[in-house]
Length: 208
Image (cartoon, rainbow, N blue to C red):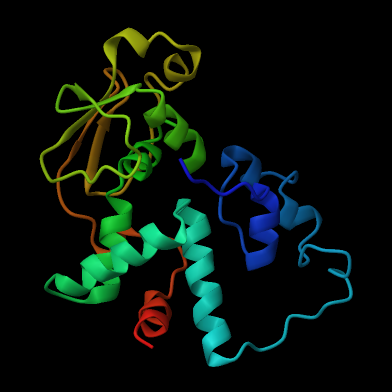
């Protein structure tokens, strides 16, 4: 399986913002963006962030979203092309498709600390969709799907730790931390995506 091997904190520093790739660490003083908020590399301290060209701004926005969700270029472009064929606003359709990836849904439900952690949880076969084990992180969930942690995995320490917790999640999801079972109650709307994403820049880039 193809994946990004660049260190997580380096990716945040390159994009100049927190991508929350390391879970709780990103909210503490240990976060690299708190300790060293400069462009990575030998000359990071001496380099000044300049105003990007139109193309540069579009490219950086695309890279930021790819890194945020852990999606590589081919798959990311496939989401754009599928969104373009759908009715509605292409940018919002694209974000909705990415949000409905199984690894992202598991993350939004609070089952894992970060998207990469949730991708690992899915890969290891700990998650079921409508009672069937699914180990494909990019699996697209639909309204009405029931997402759960496999019964024989619920006693693992990482899952026991979240039982009974109160977790804030988007309104398009429901999740019971006692039974570790959730449901997709609606499609994600643009207002449900709280990340600072300018999807129109990405659409302009791919439309060239």
